[in-house]
Length: 229
Image (cartoon, one colour):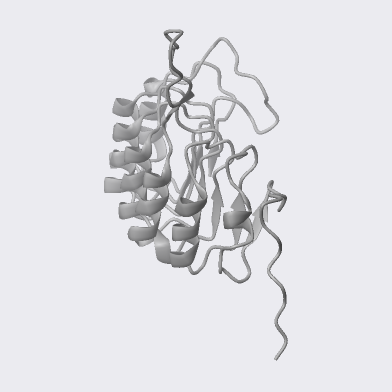
């Protein structure tokens, strides 16, 4: 296991050194921009690119766990490389990786038997510029397409923990579709997902699923009654 989280200005050069030094045996790597206790990004931003991650993926095929929290320059191309070369991946943390989109998540879902996936505040989450006449829809990097691919991919049978906190582009329907298919899913975190309602929270049929960060509170719906035979 190698943890270099909080290394300011981490770049492709760092990945090159790590790959050359211990690529053949490396299973657990954390190159997150900030440590777990960090709440703000520092001026010396992460400069890891898709090219650097591709080098890492090719030289470290035994990787099982990777964390790239707050690496804004990390995009879908790097995730495609991981999915193609690191088939042993079971744990991926992409928290606040703003360049990640559904395309990258889809590659991981199809290529790796993930057990834990963290997309906390990942992807773009922006409102379009207004011209003063009409309000458009917000643009999201992570949407129901990611949930659909997780349902369809090899990760559907292995996924145990999913964090979609602050992913405003997902819906009740998308979550319901995934939870119906992901039989091993035990923990779902939805902090900041104000768009998710009781339609999902009180309507999904997954026994044993614990939903964190979201309370049942949509007044339009009532709890389903317990039926005694």
